[in-house]
Image 1 (cartoon, rainbow, N blue to C red):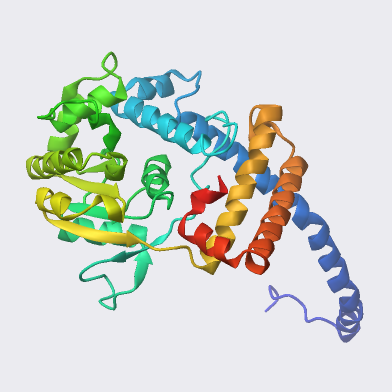
Image 2 (cartoon, rainbow, N blue to C red):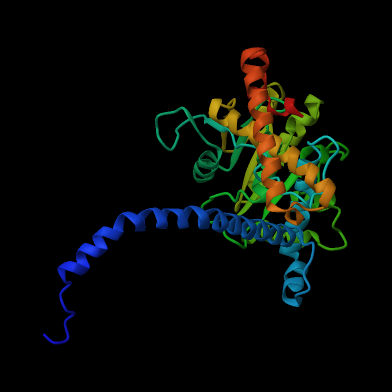
Length: 361
Protein backbone atom coordinates (compact mmCIF):
# COMPACT_ATOMS: atom_id res chain seq x y z
CA UNK A 1 0.00 0.00 0.00
CA UNK A 2 2.91 2.32 0.76
CA UNK A 3 4.14 1.96 -2.83
CA UNK A 4 0.93 3.38 -4.22
CA UNK A 5 0.84 7.01 -5.23
CA UNK A 6 -0.89 9.28 -2.75
CA UNK A 7 -4.40 10.32 -3.70
CA UNK A 8 -4.79 13.64 -5.48
CA UNK A 9 -5.86 16.26 -3.00
CA UNK A 10 -9.02 18.23 -3.78
CA UNK A 11 -7.07 21.48 -3.90
CA UNK A 12 -4.61 20.07 -6.48
CA UNK A 13 -7.44 18.68 -8.58
CA UNK A 14 -9.34 21.94 -8.59
CA UNK A 15 -6.15 23.80 -9.62
CA UNK A 16 -5.61 21.43 -12.55
CA UNK A 17 -9.22 21.80 -13.66
CA UNK A 18 -8.88 25.55 -13.38
CA UNK A 19 -5.81 25.54 -15.68
CA UNK A 20 -7.30 23.10 -18.25
CA UNK A 21 -9.02 25.80 -20.34
CA UNK A 22 -5.63 27.45 -20.74
CA UNK A 23 -3.79 24.24 -21.67
CA UNK A 24 -5.97 23.40 -24.67
CA UNK A 25 -5.42 26.68 -26.58
CA UNK A 26 -1.69 26.55 -25.86
CA UNK A 27 -1.48 22.98 -27.15
CA UNK A 28 -3.51 23.88 -30.25
CA UNK A 29 -1.26 26.87 -30.94
CA UNK A 30 1.85 24.71 -30.59
CA UNK A 31 0.45 22.15 -33.02
CA UNK A 32 -0.55 24.83 -35.53
CA UNK A 33 2.93 26.32 -35.40
CA UNK A 34 4.83 23.02 -35.54
CA UNK A 35 2.68 21.19 -38.09
CA UNK A 36 3.62 23.33 -41.14
CA UNK A 37 7.32 22.92 -40.31
CA UNK A 38 6.86 19.16 -40.00
CA UNK A 39 4.90 18.96 -43.25
CA UNK A 40 7.49 21.02 -45.15
CA UNK A 41 10.34 18.94 -43.74
CA UNK A 42 8.50 15.79 -44.76
CA UNK A 43 7.95 17.23 -48.25
CA UNK A 44 11.65 18.07 -48.58
CA UNK A 45 12.57 14.51 -47.63
CA UNK A 46 10.06 13.20 -50.16
CA UNK A 47 11.52 15.37 -52.95
CA UNK A 48 15.06 14.29 -52.10
CA UNK A 49 13.98 10.65 -51.99
CA UNK A 50 12.25 10.95 -55.38
CA UNK A 51 15.35 12.55 -56.87
CA UNK A 52 17.61 9.77 -55.57
CA UNK A 53 15.23 7.09 -56.84
CA UNK A 54 14.99 8.82 -60.22
CA UNK A 55 18.75 9.04 -60.63
CA UNK A 56 19.20 5.38 -59.69
CA UNK A 57 16.36 4.32 -62.02
CA UNK A 58 18.07 6.02 -64.94
CA UNK A 59 21.55 4.90 -63.86
CA UNK A 60 22.75 8.48 -63.74
CA UNK A 61 25.16 8.43 -60.88
CA UNK A 62 26.57 6.79 -57.87
CA UNK A 63 29.99 6.83 -56.35
CA UNK A 64 29.14 3.61 -54.53
CA UNK A 65 30.91 0.69 -56.17
CA UNK A 66 28.15 -1.75 -55.19
CA UNK A 67 25.56 0.39 -56.94
CA UNK A 68 27.82 0.75 -59.97
CA UNK A 69 28.04 -3.04 -60.06
CA UNK A 70 24.25 -3.36 -60.06
CA UNK A 71 24.01 -0.81 -62.85
CA UNK A 72 26.40 -2.85 -65.00
CA UNK A 73 24.32 -6.00 -64.56
CA UNK A 74 22.47 -6.69 -67.83
CA UNK A 75 19.05 -6.72 -66.14
CA UNK A 76 19.54 -3.33 -64.53
CA UNK A 77 21.29 -1.90 -67.57
CA UNK A 78 18.35 -2.72 -69.81
CA UNK A 79 15.78 -1.47 -67.26
CA UNK A 80 17.57 1.84 -66.92
CA UNK A 81 18.08 2.24 -70.63
CA UNK A 82 14.38 1.58 -71.33
CA UNK A 83 13.31 3.92 -68.51
CA UNK A 84 15.43 6.69 -70.03
CA UNK A 85 13.92 6.06 -73.46
CA UNK A 86 10.36 6.19 -72.13
CA UNK A 87 11.14 9.28 -70.07
CA UNK A 88 12.41 11.01 -73.21
CA UNK A 89 9.21 10.12 -75.06
CA UNK A 90 7.13 11.61 -72.26
CA UNK A 91 9.29 14.73 -72.12
CA UNK A 92 8.89 15.24 -75.85
CA UNK A 93 5.13 15.71 -75.29
CA UNK A 94 5.88 19.04 -73.61
CA UNK A 95 6.67 21.78 -76.12
CA UNK A 96 10.38 22.46 -75.98
CA UNK A 97 11.06 19.16 -74.24
CA UNK A 98 12.80 18.77 -70.91
CA UNK A 99 15.89 17.02 -69.61
CA UNK A 100 14.65 13.48 -69.00
CA UNK A 101 16.58 13.09 -65.76
CA UNK A 102 15.17 16.27 -64.22
CA UNK A 103 11.51 15.32 -63.93
CA UNK A 104 9.53 12.19 -63.24
CA UNK A 105 6.70 11.71 -65.71
CA UNK A 106 5.17 8.65 -64.07
CA UNK A 107 2.20 10.69 -62.91
CA UNK A 108 1.91 13.00 -65.90
CA UNK A 109 -1.07 11.07 -67.24
CA UNK A 110 -4.06 9.78 -65.38
CA UNK A 111 -4.56 6.09 -66.08
CA UNK A 112 -7.88 5.66 -67.89
CA UNK A 113 -10.44 2.96 -67.29
CA UNK A 114 -11.11 0.26 -69.87
CA UNK A 115 -13.98 -1.91 -71.00
CA UNK A 116 -12.81 -5.52 -70.93
CA UNK A 117 -14.74 -7.69 -73.34
CA UNK A 118 -16.00 -11.03 -72.13
CA UNK A 119 -16.12 -11.98 -68.48
CA UNK A 120 -14.74 -9.45 -66.00
CA UNK A 121 -13.48 -9.69 -62.41
CA UNK A 122 -16.80 -8.33 -61.10
CA UNK A 123 -18.94 -10.31 -63.58
CA UNK A 124 -21.02 -7.14 -63.91
CA UNK A 125 -19.39 -5.62 -66.95
CA UNK A 126 -18.72 -1.89 -67.06
CA UNK A 127 -15.46 0.01 -66.75
CA UNK A 128 -12.57 -1.30 -64.68
CA UNK A 129 -9.07 0.01 -64.08
CA UNK A 130 -6.36 -0.89 -66.56
CA UNK A 131 -4.33 -2.60 -63.83
CA UNK A 132 -7.28 -4.84 -63.00
CA UNK A 133 -7.90 -5.62 -66.67
CA UNK A 134 -4.23 -6.46 -67.24
CA UNK A 135 -4.05 -8.76 -64.22
CA UNK A 136 -7.31 -10.51 -65.08
CA UNK A 137 -6.43 -10.93 -68.76
CA UNK A 138 -3.02 -12.40 -67.89
CA UNK A 139 -4.74 -15.19 -65.94
CA UNK A 140 -7.19 -16.08 -68.70
CA UNK A 141 -5.34 -15.39 -71.96
CA UNK A 142 -1.92 -14.84 -73.55
CA UNK A 143 -2.41 -11.39 -75.07
CA UNK A 144 -4.31 -8.24 -74.15
CA UNK A 145 -5.34 -6.16 -77.17
CA UNK A 146 -5.72 -2.54 -76.07
CA UNK A 147 -7.84 -0.49 -78.48
CA UNK A 148 -8.06 3.29 -78.27
CA UNK A 149 -8.35 6.37 -80.44
CA UNK A 150 -5.26 8.17 -81.76
CA UNK A 151 -3.88 10.43 -79.03
CA UNK A 152 -5.95 8.68 -76.38
CA UNK A 153 -2.95 7.70 -74.25
CA UNK A 154 -2.20 4.11 -75.33
CA UNK A 155 1.55 4.65 -75.64
CA UNK A 156 1.68 6.66 -72.41
CA UNK A 157 -0.11 3.84 -70.67
CA UNK A 158 2.47 1.33 -71.91
CA UNK A 159 5.36 3.58 -70.93
CA UNK A 160 3.90 4.09 -67.46
CA UNK A 161 4.36 0.36 -66.87
CA UNK A 162 8.06 0.78 -67.64
CA UNK A 163 8.47 3.94 -65.57
CA UNK A 164 7.12 2.60 -62.34
CA UNK A 165 3.48 1.55 -62.51
CA UNK A 166 4.52 -2.06 -61.91
CA UNK A 167 1.98 -4.59 -63.16
CA UNK A 168 0.36 -6.99 -60.74
CA UNK A 169 0.74 -10.16 -62.77
CA UNK A 170 0.64 -13.68 -61.45
CA UNK A 171 4.19 -15.01 -61.30
CA UNK A 172 5.71 -11.58 -61.96
CA UNK A 173 8.70 -10.95 -59.65
CA UNK A 174 11.68 -8.65 -59.28
CA UNK A 175 13.57 -10.88 -61.71
CA UNK A 176 10.92 -10.43 -64.38
CA UNK A 177 11.58 -8.02 -67.20
CA UNK A 178 9.31 -5.69 -69.13
CA UNK A 179 10.25 -5.63 -72.80
CA UNK A 180 8.98 -2.76 -74.95
CA UNK A 181 8.87 -2.60 -78.74
CA UNK A 182 7.37 0.12 -80.96
CA UNK A 183 6.01 -1.83 -83.90
CA UNK A 184 7.28 0.85 -86.27
CA UNK A 185 10.64 -0.90 -85.75
CA UNK A 186 9.33 -3.64 -88.04
CA UNK A 187 8.41 -1.24 -90.83
CA UNK A 188 11.87 -1.30 -92.40
CA UNK A 189 12.46 -5.04 -91.89
CA UNK A 190 11.52 -7.34 -94.78
CA UNK A 191 9.43 -10.41 -94.09
CA UNK A 192 9.82 -12.96 -92.69
CA UNK A 193 10.59 -11.01 -89.54
CA UNK A 194 13.38 -12.23 -87.24
CA UNK A 195 12.57 -13.82 -83.89
CA UNK A 196 11.40 -11.61 -81.04
CA UNK A 197 14.76 -11.55 -79.16
CA UNK A 198 16.57 -10.45 -82.33
CA UNK A 199 14.08 -7.65 -82.99
CA UNK A 200 14.23 -6.42 -79.39
CA UNK A 201 18.02 -6.27 -79.52
CA UNK A 202 18.08 -4.62 -82.94
CA UNK A 203 15.63 -1.91 -81.92
CA UNK A 204 17.41 -1.15 -78.64
CA UNK A 205 20.76 -0.64 -80.36
CA UNK A 206 22.47 -2.25 -77.37
CA UNK A 207 24.46 -4.84 -79.32
CA UNK A 208 27.68 -3.80 -77.57
CA UNK A 209 26.15 -4.10 -74.09
CA UNK A 210 23.72 -7.02 -74.47
CA UNK A 211 23.23 -10.07 -76.63
CA UNK A 212 20.28 -11.98 -78.01
CA UNK A 213 20.74 -14.55 -75.26
CA UNK A 214 19.76 -11.91 -72.67
CA UNK A 215 16.28 -11.56 -74.18
CA UNK A 216 16.04 -15.27 -74.98
CA UNK A 217 16.90 -16.24 -71.41
CA UNK A 218 14.27 -13.99 -69.85
CA UNK A 219 11.57 -15.04 -72.29
CA UNK A 220 12.36 -18.68 -71.60
CA UNK A 221 12.95 -18.81 -67.84
CA UNK A 222 11.01 -15.92 -66.26
CA UNK A 223 7.52 -14.49 -66.32
CA UNK A 224 7.90 -11.60 -68.77
CA UNK A 225 5.69 -8.75 -69.95
CA UNK A 226 6.11 -7.83 -73.62
CA UNK A 227 4.62 -4.48 -74.66
CA UNK A 228 4.03 -4.14 -78.42
CA UNK A 229 3.01 -0.57 -79.08
CA UNK A 230 1.43 0.98 -82.13
CA UNK A 231 0.03 -1.48 -84.64
CA UNK A 232 -1.96 1.49 -85.95
CA UNK A 233 1.31 3.30 -86.73
CA UNK A 234 1.79 0.83 -89.61
CA UNK A 235 -0.31 2.31 -92.39
CA UNK A 236 0.02 -0.57 -94.85
CA UNK A 237 -2.75 -3.17 -94.23
CA UNK A 238 -0.60 -5.99 -95.60
CA UNK A 239 2.21 -5.03 -93.26
CA UNK A 240 -0.17 -4.96 -90.28
CA UNK A 241 -1.40 -8.41 -91.25
CA UNK A 242 2.17 -9.73 -91.43
CA UNK A 243 3.00 -8.19 -88.05
CA UNK A 244 -0.08 -9.79 -86.49
CA UNK A 245 1.03 -13.20 -87.78
CA UNK A 246 4.50 -12.58 -86.36
CA UNK A 247 2.97 -11.65 -82.98
CA UNK A 248 0.81 -14.78 -82.97
CA UNK A 249 3.92 -16.89 -83.64
CA UNK A 250 5.79 -15.15 -80.80
CA UNK A 251 2.89 -15.74 -78.40
CA UNK A 252 2.95 -19.43 -79.30
CA UNK A 253 6.73 -19.71 -78.90
CA UNK A 254 7.33 -17.81 -75.64
CA UNK A 255 4.96 -19.48 -73.21
CA UNK A 256 6.14 -17.64 -70.09
CA UNK A 257 5.52 -14.21 -71.60
CA UNK A 258 2.33 -12.18 -71.54
CA UNK A 259 1.83 -9.73 -74.40
CA UNK A 260 0.04 -6.38 -74.66
CA UNK A 261 -0.67 -4.99 -78.13
CA UNK A 262 -2.03 -1.49 -78.77
CA UNK A 263 -3.91 -0.24 -81.81
CA UNK A 264 -6.77 1.98 -82.91
CA UNK A 265 -10.21 0.72 -84.00
CA UNK A 266 -9.63 1.64 -87.65
CA UNK A 267 -6.39 -0.36 -87.81
CA UNK A 268 -7.72 -3.67 -86.54
CA UNK A 269 -10.12 -5.12 -89.06
CA UNK A 270 -10.96 -8.60 -90.25
CA UNK A 271 -7.54 -9.20 -91.81
CA UNK A 272 -5.71 -8.32 -88.61
CA UNK A 273 -8.15 -10.34 -86.48
CA UNK A 274 -7.66 -13.44 -88.63
CA UNK A 275 -3.86 -13.07 -88.54
CA UNK A 276 -3.71 -12.61 -84.76
CA UNK A 277 -4.59 -16.23 -84.12
CA UNK A 278 -3.89 -16.56 -80.39
CA UNK A 279 -5.83 -16.50 -77.13
CA UNK A 280 -6.64 -12.80 -76.87
CA UNK A 281 -8.65 -10.56 -74.56
CA UNK A 282 -9.76 -7.16 -75.86
CA UNK A 283 -9.89 -4.00 -73.75
CA UNK A 284 -11.21 -0.68 -75.05
CA UNK A 285 -9.92 2.58 -73.57
CA UNK A 286 -12.69 4.73 -72.18
CA UNK A 287 -12.85 8.50 -72.29
CA UNK A 288 -11.89 10.31 -69.12
CA UNK A 289 -14.76 10.86 -66.73
CA UNK A 290 -15.13 14.27 -65.03
CA UNK A 291 -12.96 13.31 -62.07
CA UNK A 292 -10.18 11.87 -64.24
CA UNK A 293 -10.25 14.88 -66.56
CA UNK A 294 -10.11 17.24 -63.58
CA UNK A 295 -7.03 15.43 -62.29
CA UNK A 296 -5.47 15.25 -65.75
CA UNK A 297 -5.61 19.03 -66.21
CA UNK A 298 -3.77 19.53 -62.93
CA UNK A 299 -1.14 16.94 -63.70
CA UNK A 300 -0.55 18.42 -67.14
CA UNK A 301 -0.14 22.02 -65.96
CA UNK A 302 1.96 20.88 -63.02
CA UNK A 303 4.32 19.19 -65.50
CA UNK A 304 4.49 22.38 -67.56
CA UNK A 305 5.30 24.49 -64.51
CA UNK A 306 7.90 22.09 -63.22
CA UNK A 307 9.42 22.00 -66.70
CA UNK A 308 10.07 25.73 -66.33
CA UNK A 309 11.82 25.07 -63.03
CA UNK A 310 13.96 22.41 -64.70
CA UNK A 311 15.03 24.88 -67.37
CA UNK A 312 16.05 27.41 -64.72
CA UNK A 313 17.64 25.12 -62.13
CA UNK A 314 18.42 21.85 -63.92
CA UNK A 315 16.52 19.74 -61.39
CA UNK A 316 13.32 20.33 -59.46
CA UNK A 317 15.01 18.96 -56.34
CA UNK A 318 17.45 21.89 -56.46
CA UNK A 319 14.61 24.41 -56.00
CA UNK A 320 13.33 25.72 -52.70
CA UNK A 321 10.13 24.20 -51.41
CA UNK A 322 8.49 27.64 -51.54
CA UNK A 323 9.29 27.94 -55.24
CA UNK A 324 7.90 24.48 -55.99
CA UNK A 325 4.72 25.18 -54.04
CA UNK A 326 4.25 28.50 -55.84
CA UNK A 327 4.53 26.84 -59.25
CA UNK A 328 2.14 24.07 -58.20
CA UNK A 329 -0.39 26.68 -57.06
CA UNK A 330 -0.05 28.50 -60.39
CA UNK A 331 -0.65 25.17 -62.14
CA UNK A 332 -3.90 24.68 -60.23
CA UNK A 333 -5.06 28.18 -61.16
CA UNK A 334 -4.31 27.54 -64.87
CA UNK A 335 -6.07 24.17 -64.76
CA UNK A 336 -9.16 25.66 -63.11
CA UNK A 337 -9.27 28.46 -65.68
CA UNK A 338 -8.98 26.04 -68.62
CA UNK A 339 -11.58 23.68 -67.21
CA UNK A 340 -14.04 26.53 -66.59
CA UNK A 341 -13.46 27.93 -70.08
CA UNK A 342 -13.96 24.59 -71.80
CA UNK A 343 -17.11 23.81 -69.84
CA UNK A 344 -18.74 27.20 -70.34
CA UNK A 345 -17.46 28.30 -73.74
CA UNK A 346 -16.36 25.18 -75.65
CA UNK A 347 -18.27 22.14 -74.33
CA UNK A 348 -17.65 20.29 -77.61
CA UNK A 349 -13.89 20.75 -77.24
CA UNK A 350 -14.19 19.61 -73.63
CA UNK A 351 -15.60 16.30 -74.81
CA UNK A 352 -12.86 15.98 -77.44
CA UNK A 353 -10.16 16.53 -74.83
CA UNK A 354 -11.79 13.85 -72.69
CA UNK A 355 -11.49 11.43 -75.61
CA UNK A 356 -8.07 12.61 -76.79
CA UNK A 357 -6.03 14.06 -73.91
CA UNK A 358 -3.02 14.81 -76.12
CA UNK A 359 -4.99 17.67 -77.72
CA UNK A 360 -3.55 19.71 -74.84
CA UNK A 361 -0.12 19.19 -76.35
